[in-house]
Length: 412
Image 1 (cartoon, helix red, strand yellow):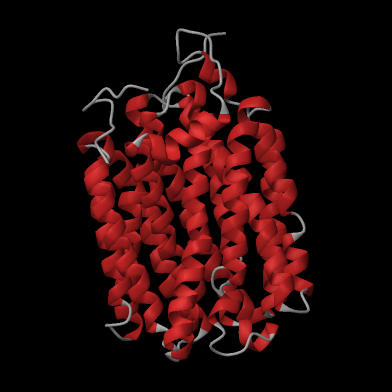
Image 2: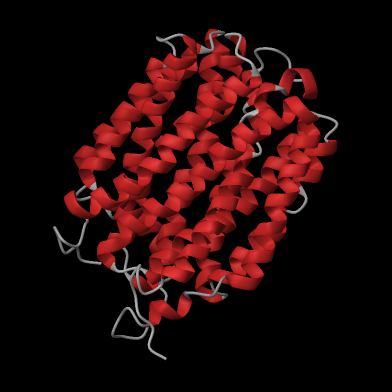
């Protein structure tokens, strides 16, 4: 039976994969609002212990970055569906650990498991959609993928905030997490097909995977176009680490209640998620490079505004601006990597890019933690991240190039 590529030809399976990434995002949302806010009261983290507070995000970033590498390679040997299923299995203990964690060290353990889950599962939802899509649809497909994932993250952050008020923090995390993870596991087993066979029909010659070391070197430093994208991916995760670690604590110290904190942070996630439906498609029309550079600058501007404005509406506006910047850059950095990678090693290349990107969680959390710790001012973390985004945007503008097949035909 002939396999056809394209969004419309594979609408059913792409729809199932969108549900999957929605649930993956909801699993990530378990940790986004409630846990950092209650670190001091529920888990014994001392006030102003910014490095300790950020330790769970450091663990998440390091583990997820490594799992991205593993997932990319495994997906070319085992198939996408098996790796996705393994990702959901790895998430099963997370709600139980959150519910009965006696200390902050157990939260770090839960986040480590979350990194395994996210590295396996989110990677596969993205790779599988790229397998099914046409080259000129990559921006649109990745926009839809990240829309679903970050919408799920934002919704989970708000829902768990209200649940923590109504039921208690641990009870809400247990109930929500168990339901989402269980549903994801069932749907993967019953409805997701392996998309690896579509790769063999996208090229005329037999698909031979490139050596891992060669792909790692090419993406990381040998090809300056790919290296520019990798460093931008790494630095943009500084923003998400800041939102995860510092935003809840900063807003809590400004006197906001937990549901209000959920809404401010949720604004960041919702704008990020919804806008990607349009920004991914935009890059299919005007190219990847301009949205990526603009996104870095806009996102950093939103970060700085957080310490300038006041009130729920002001903070929501600043968070939304950062979310819009993320929407411009997030799907389009990945799409640019996919443009520049040959089908035979695209899964590995995306895994290497995602390794560097998600390592940004760990490096960013350490950096912003040190900035806040050394200055004893939480606002220093915002300045560190905003400056990092500006420098990274300059590097991307200088070393990066347009990659969309409509505008150029790069040698891969």
